[in-house]
Length: 351
Image (cartoon, rainbow, N blue to C red):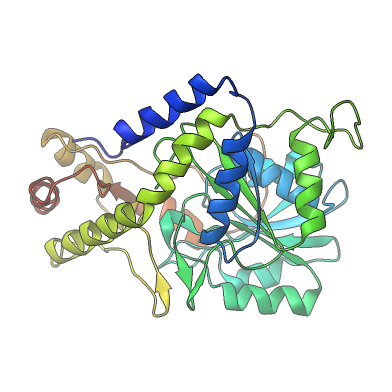
């Protein structure tokens, strides 16, 4: 039983065929339409489609003017792309601890990490649960810094009735094949400010808005029309995908009561979209062996905190991060599964 796989069908194939028949394969009308449609997911904010979630994080930071000499507060319990994007701007990630129940950046720990060079805080909506955005908005206002949401795992999650991606100055989403929706590869940078969004559009296209009029030094981070066409179909299916993930999570949580593991939480006022269904267990290796014997794929995200990776090596004490890295295990929850599959997962966990 696979942990995740992209759900691509006839509509996606027909969308790609339409693009191929048009002859417009690179960034074109499909990308523009995808950006406009995705804006409906983030309260009408300005959307800039790029070639990956990492690129979305990178251009979001650059478009806000973040660069050498600056610091950005980030969690260490996340995928390395969060901190990579900061370092790629020439800025320095400052690692702070997480909340033990949501696995998201702890606002109190982030506040303690703010220093004179801090220009932004980057909470990650990890595994699909939104970070405490009311707290981060207040923290940012007190210190005069920007909030940049890493929403790469949290399409359609919400906090206090507001969708993730609609807080702070900017946000980034990923459309990697195993995300809650996919374009094959791709990302979306989201901005509150139109001028920042225009800068991001320049950055993704060699610094040009018009051909051969390079206004700034930029990259080639364009999304293709084929990717965007897939994304437009996936966006229409996202509510269905999300409802199925949430139903699967409810079934798993009920089936794992009394099984000796800690199941995920959904805080009041939040909408968890379960990119991963992540439990905690102190007997992880034994449980992994039992799941493997039952033919159930499970995975550890993330066994080495980012601050301990060779690329960063930061001397900082993050006890909740360390505990999560020792104890977390993600179980299958994706929409391709059946109720029978989920019952089998629960039986394997229970032993």
